[in-house]
Length: 149
Image 1 (tube, rainbow, N blue to C red):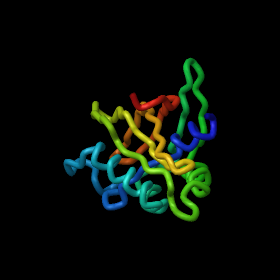
Image 2: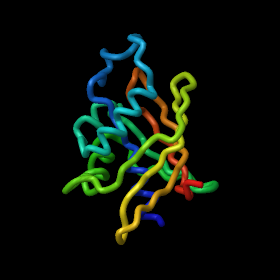
Image 3: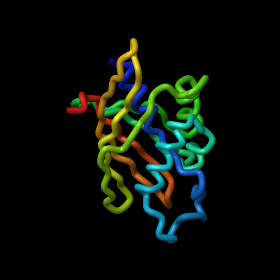
Image 4: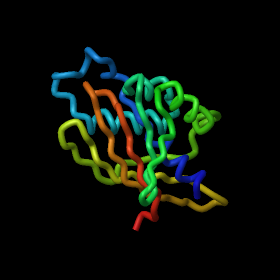
């Protein structure tokens, strides 16, 4: 379960390469949900470089499990290293946004991760909150995975 939760956390390190930079995007009507949607697509396609373009250098990825918060990564390089094993040799887990809404610099989501195990499709859902700074992902708080009922 811990491995799956970590996998789900890493799944949602999602990026939008067409808009990413401090100068591009800011103030041009770019919606953070659109950035997040492209980030997930880049994850699903295994495009780590594209994912990294929409992260701040000091991005932090945090897991929330009940009353415990664990910081998994504290910068872009750590997150890239954590993602590499999952993207190596093709990405067998796919992520999708079930629901998302934006409030200022924050996007709250219900995300679904799907994969095949022993010939059967499996999935789990998690709630995540993304904080953006100038159209770049700055912080992610990822809740423990649950069934997608």
